[in-house]
Image (cartoon, rainbow, N blue to C red):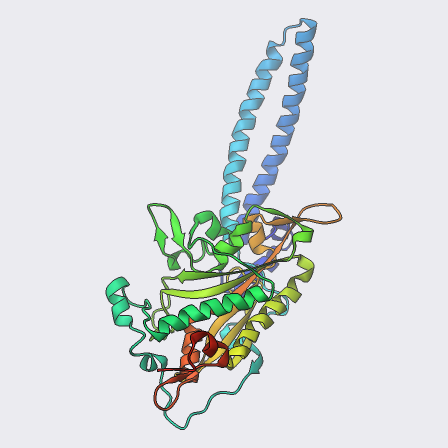
Length: 418
């Protein structure tokens, strides 16, 4: 959520930011409602002043034995008018709040303008594997251990069912990733896999992405679409001390997405599914260290891929490819040898104070003074389906077996999957 001072003073900036993100907003309607609210507030303040004066006059007359009926009648009339205006301002506040939920975050100045074609490749790492045989996609290499038809009988299309070594690989990767984060100083969180509307709104999945969510209507709960929702909301409506920052968290979660609007995109195999697992990294940071923390999260996630020997590239996303809530985002893409393309495995985003305003997450400065909003950041560390795609396709051998990187071979107890 954006600061109301910014909306008032720089409405053009807000409008241009929304346009850069391909979001439609009506800042003029907000400005009109805000102006009406401020006019009402002046009237309310004047009526409150009059009511206080009348109250004092009634008190003085009663103490002196004088008749105060006229002043009491005026006070009741003032109270009635005041109640009506306060009701009107509450309605305007609700309208303002709903409009503000539809205003996207403003991209950082160094974010390039345009759509995904304007994303900037910042760096690449690793060698693209070359084979002396025809490389296969993962759905052929995993034919006996990845069974989408069985998953379909259980839950419908685009769900995952692993068995045998694929199930063990998934479990091993989750454990390995969590250990990697914990050893770097992150605290592990095991959070609910469902969330209330307030939690989804705080991290800005609602109202923007509601069509993409699975909802449990009877309980008014949502299946979480990403681990950032429960982990970040751990600090919703909380006040931290400056000395508590940074807060560095990680947590495993399944993620549920309808993938509304993604029809027609490549969804074969594990590329695009309705439920997937990942380990999320969340950082609550002092505003002065926000940019540095963003780079740290990026390099931390990239370091995992280097340990696994997976070629990757890092993209700075252009404004039109940024999420609704992000001010800046790096995507990490990994190489898929069987499909001969790059696949996103992590988005490392800095939301500045956007989520903190929505979720009322603040810190108290060590030297005293006004409470400040924290900065929130998060990123996948890492998302499993596409990580498994890359491991399987890049590690394939001529006989169809899969050679594991040493970082996983020790945990799996084998060097080659057959």
